[in-house]
Structure formats: structure tokens, C-alpha cells
Length: 109
Image 1 (spheres, rainbow, N blue to C red):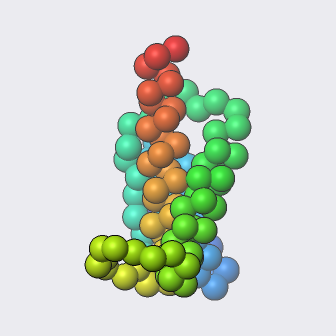
Image 2 (tube, helix red, strand yellow; image 1 turned 90 degrees about the horizontal axis):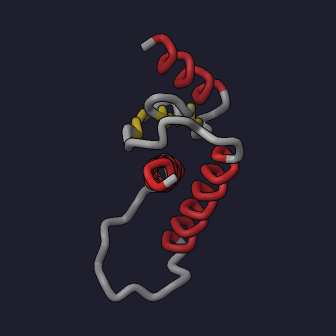
């Protein structure tokens, strides 16, 4: 719990920036809301996995921004995502995808 509190404090002091702390479970916080990604990953992290994670987060964030700016036509009615939730959701999605890919690769090789 002290680790979570420290990460939340840093996010608050940086004016609500979203922070991802990788670990046994990834901690994602903006200092107000904190979520965890417990998706099973590979048993060992490889070099460059953080690069893949940051790229996935940036991609999901970009898609979310495009959606919020209505840059494409949607045929379905979907729940709106607040601008405060968007970075948290993008970070969680990036963590989940990266952990899943790592787990599947580790199982195969």
C-alpha cells in the first residue's frame, strides 16, 4: 500500500499526470483514481517491453482522442469517456495487451 500511496502522490504533484508503475500487478493512477492490471504476463520481462507498452498506450490514447473529437462516424451509440478517464483507460488497455502478448509468447517459446 505505501507504494500505491507514493505513486498517487507523485501523480498529484505532477498535476494529475497518469503514471504506470510496472510490476507483479501494474499500478495505473492519475492521483485521484487508481486502477490495477492483473492480467497474466510472461514469467520474465524482456528488454524493450516498456517500449511496446508505451507505444500501445500512445495508440489507445490517440484512438480515444479521435473518438472524443468525433473524427470518425460511429454507427453505434456508445457511452462517452471523460477526458479524465481516457488516459487511465488507454494505460490499462496498453498494460493488458502487453501482458497478454508476453504471456502468449512465453508459453509458445
